[in-house]
Structures are given as structure tokens and as C-alpha cells.
Image (cartoon, rainbow, N blue to C red; front, side):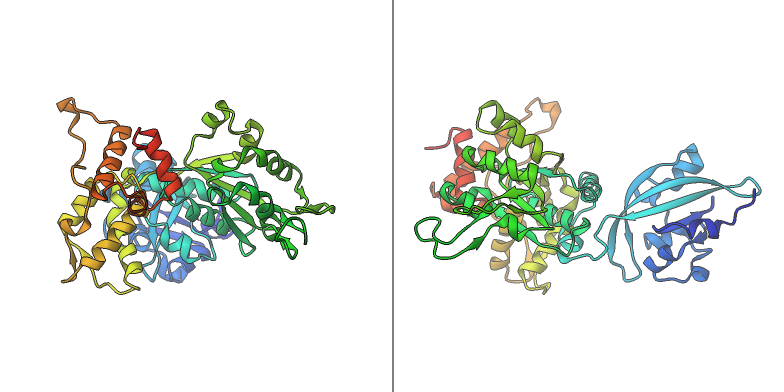
Length: 433
């Protein structure tokens, strides 16, 4: 049966392109052509890597896993993550699904179906701040894009400063609730006696000082997304009430008698192991399972060293109001990539902020970064001196305490975390005094 490639790929809603053994594009649907700013007539005959990667070399020669190479050398149809470049040279992370196609004369072609990972109506948060092309980060963004399409509750795990709120906003922008409310509450920052009022609102006169009606965050987030940051800090007494609204969508304002309903998708985040909190009887197991419909772990910055140059450039532009007044010297880039970053992206931003203030000639050098003394990379394995991440974190905290004469507020600011989080870390490492 002879099927015309063009009529077949035009049925795809996603960008689709057909490529021959010589990397030449033989057919592309309109969605693919629109993405790269070319007409169907102009794109046929072009090299696939010249169009999508703006490169004269195939992507496997640049170190990427290549669907073309997998098909024509191993006869495998694979799915990979790549960064493609549009006609305006803007990068876009894309999941590529390869297909093995056979022509009328028996020749083999590669069919590529593209799934852009950024939100279609991209915002600054998902299109620009989610900077990175390292394998760990690309895999994480891919998973975030997949889970965004469901209605399940999502629990984001990650160390302080990895960008959990940014990931939650990315999920919201990719979901069916995009355009509706995105409401944030930091559970660690709300006093226990005000928690119920914050979540569910209160009626006038419900308690001393409540002079008027107040809508709670669940009510404000109706048909949208509610992001519960530091969800491990929710008081035990409130957990049963939160569980009920998650199960039924029903709640009452404090002091009210009328049952209200809200259709809210909940995304939560924590840097604590909630199952350990369950074992310690500080957290309800049924609430944990309700929040962790799907869990996603965000990689720490130390696992994304390859992303540091681009991430630092972006942060420097933000810190200088969009003006490229400072650049990183090679020794500064090397120092950043050798550093462990226990405070992750938030700590990187703080380090660069200090460096910008000290930058006089437009160049930030390693010495300008004020990295904690003694925090050199771990010695090679063959020296037998492997250092655990816990020991490195403890040493880093101690060096910051020494540098700031034990002033916890300054140490917390240097790390980009709250004093409450710092206090817990100090206690974990026996540095509480």
C-alpha cells in the first residue's frame, strides 16, 4: 500500500518531520515548519540538524543521543531530550520520539515527533528561568511537563534553593488550569494559630481582631493551583482538616456554618523526608499519600555543574537590570563548578549579587565570589579520602558561622534560606550552640 508521507504527517497535532539516511528532510508538517520559521517547500532538502540545532554537524557528533544514529546504525527507534533552536535563535527543550518509517520502495526513513516541554503560552518563569541543558535537569523538566498534564496532586522534593516554587509554576503553566489563579503559601511562615484562617478564611467576628470576612487560599485558588511550600511544616493539628478538604473539596471558614467547595489542584514541596516524619508520628500517613499522588525530585545544583555558566549569565542579567555590565572570568566559572552549593541556586544568586557590588572593571574573578574558605572539591577516589555530602555540608555551615562570627541571620542570608531552616540544619549537624 503506497501512502503519501505528507498526508500522513499532516494528521499529527505535534510537529512532525521525516528524515532520510543522509540527514535530509523529505517532509514536514505545518506545525514543524511554523516552529522553525520556514515554509514546507523551503524546509524540504535541508539538513535536519541545521534546522533544529543551527549546527552543520549531526547532533551525535556534538555528544547528544541522536535518534537518526540510533535508527540507521542500530535499527532502534528511541525517545530523547534535546534543546532545539527556533528561527529567532531562542532555545526550547524538546522531547523527540523517533519512528521507523518504510517508503514505497522499501527504503527506511526516520520520523521524528516533537513534544516541546515549555508551556505553549510560555511565561518568563518557565521559558527563561528554567535554565539548563544538563542530563539531570533535562530529565527533571521532562517529568514536570508530563505530570503537569494530569490532575493528580504533586509532591516536589528537593533541597533548599533548588527552585521548587519555580517548578510548581512551570507545572501550572503547562496544565489545563493555566490562566487561572496560582496561589502560594509558605507553611513554615504561618503561625499555628492562624493556619486554619489562612487556608479556609474566616467570618466576621470569628475571633478577636477579625473585623471582616476573609476568603481563604483554597477559596481564592478555586479552579486553579494551590502551592503548599514547606508542606512538612504543617502543624499536626491542622493535618486532619487539610486532609478532609483534599478528599472532598469541602471546607468551612473559621466561625462559619456554611459548607463551601473549591476545585483546587494542590502542588506541594518539601526538603524533608516526610515518611521519616510519619515514622516519628509528626505527620499523618494518609495526608502524605494524598499529597504525593506523583512525586518529583529536583536535582541539586552540584549535579548540574554543566548548567552553571548559562545560569550565572542569566542571573547576572537579572541582577544588573538586563544590562550585561559584568561577566565571569574563566577562573570564576571554574571556581563555581568546583563548589558544592549546599544552598543551590539561591546561594548562587547571593554570591553573584555580592560579586556584582564588588565588580569594578566589568569582570568577576574567582576572588570576587567570596566562596567559603576550605571548601575545595573532594579529593579523587584513588586517594581514599571520600567525603560524604553530610560532612561537606557540616564543614560549609561551620565555615560560614566562622566567617560571620556566629551571626545566624547573616549565615541564613548567605545561604538564601530562612533562619528557621538554618536552625534545623545546625541542629542536625550538632552546631546548634
